[in-house]
Image (tube, rainbow, N blue to C red; front, top):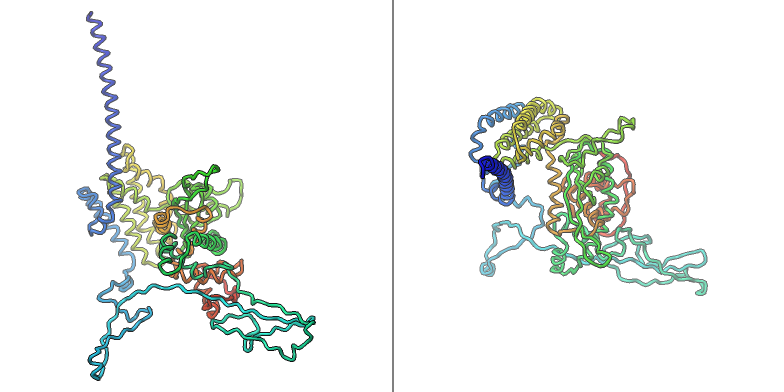
Length: 591
């Protein structure tokens, strides 16, 4: 082989070796990125698995996760603490006793409104000897006894009516009322004694039986009373007890109720409440609401069977929640989490909508077509959530990125400065935010832009920085209105009810059943918001609703229920079966 051929072969081999090295370097870099991503994913999964235990240990979860990374940010923490201190000093001091006092010692049960059962323990030997009893040493304990169901017997009076031509006379038992009324007492059947006034020829008399009209109800000829229906609704949607467990509990109490029967009652009640009270609450929220916090979560829906009889897999629906000012917590089921669903829910809203950075909400801010010349036709104002922004930096900090630590410290300073201003009067709160939160916002986004310019790769750090920069306009809008919260966590807290149900009963029977569940969730959550017992509310509203005018359903919403209930006849409320006198609509409802 000539020298020239050997040189050519060596050059080719060296080129191939360089290519192989470059290819290997690319693969190694790709594998390193994969290993880094898997390590980050493992760290986040460990946090979700063991996070509660570390929080209960009394040690800061930030210290546990970051360790020595905090030492390098001591100067930044010192500067942020100084700004938080300035914001706290600018706000009025917290008055003594404003917070909830911590209990000390044994609880005083004498102030409890629970019913009392007194048990006297006596000394039988001393009692037999005739010793004088001079008193008792009293002690109190909280005891429990299961509540019991009972059979409600509705006795509807029947009357023998004797007619003679155009004259009608009803013979009733002596002492009974001529009009329809309800009485809890049990009356013996009485006989009718004809009088001289009714004595006519037998051939001219016609005798018929007239039954007293029953009070109107949402559940005619129902097996279950509204109190039992309210118990089923609150057990499932307030306490998260699925029907199969409730079926077992009721059977133990001597009341065998099939879960299918309970589901039918739930669907009937939920759809009725959803089409009346909850629909009025939604209309009022869209028309008059100022700030709505919203979020969504998924839920499984049991599908219908295929045409050939095969069972299909569950489909996925979605529940939206809307926390409307301090008035209501509403839920709505939609089949798909899309911009069209959001437009249908909030398209007519003209207030402030606080949500996460999901792209489905962008359609709201774009508003109607530009050729519509209407100043009131502008879309809603979208406001970002600082809790979502903080979450991305927290995940980056867990994976030991210095950017995550710095961002987390800055956002925590923002929350601390805002907390100090919550004690201020409403008129002064906006100025406090502009003075103390505005500079913190400017520093945060300036730091974010600088950090993003120097950061490289696609990792949790760049993801957190990108989220903050993309949402800068929405995150800054909390400065526009002092009543706007910094985060959207109240909507996320409301969605916990859906998540608890998702773990308890796994799926909803149909789209219709999910819509009914959304209506019941709305009323239960709104009752909790206004500190109303959901069972008592549902039991009374299910009886009142049959008599209420259609254009006044909003009066039965939990936010107005205390005022509406005070105007009802208390004697009619105490009756378990009876009619209701609807009070006049005036005065107008306050907001």
